[in-house]
Amino acid sequence: MNHYETVFILNPVLSEEQIKETVKKYEEILVSKGAKMISKENWGLKKLAYAIQHKKSGFYHLFEYTVAGEAINELEVEFRRDERIMRYLTVALDKHAIAWAEKRRNRNKKTA
Amino acid sequence: MSSIEQQAKGKKEGEIRYLTPLNIETAKVKKYCMFQKSGIKYVDYKDPDFLMRFINEQGKILPRRLTGTSLKYQRKVAVAVKRSRHLALMPYVADLLK
Image (cartoon, rainbow over all chains, first blue to last red; front, side):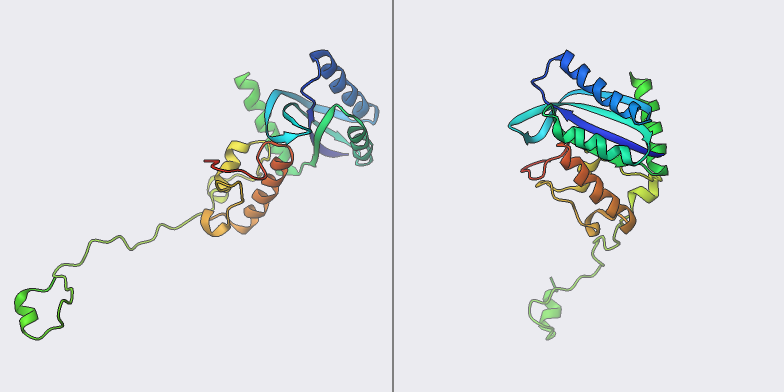
């Protein structure tokens, strides 16, 4: 089991319900692969630094979880097939990154 | 400027001589690696505002010789900036960013 973090950008034309559905779908994919979700973050609609697919904004979502490495491949295949996903990035976290992520979570909790 | 007497005594014409040493700051301010100084172990790609310090107006990554970052952290900064660009948190090309 390794520690991972995934950020993905959803198409801004989606309705709120479709977004919830998409996020839920990927969460279920991860859980079905035996992942343990550590945190989910919704950054909301953000402006992009440059246009992707002629769109200037997108819905950012962040997952943090532990899962066996093989599951990442299957998750990314799903991302690539899905039109609703404009961009994604999965990063393996080392011990410093895990410590940072935890600190960040606590900080966000305080402000929220 | 040299005084009229000094010039008259055959010193070089128009040679500039100062009676008191000039007050010019010559001591250089030493650059330092801000990661090592403030004990940051991980460079976060999700924080574009912080990474702004390490890019120039065109969005290019600044060299170590200008920012003073140590080699270990310069590599991490470079990776973080590139990840941040991929997620459209930072631009690949820009103009008048600052």
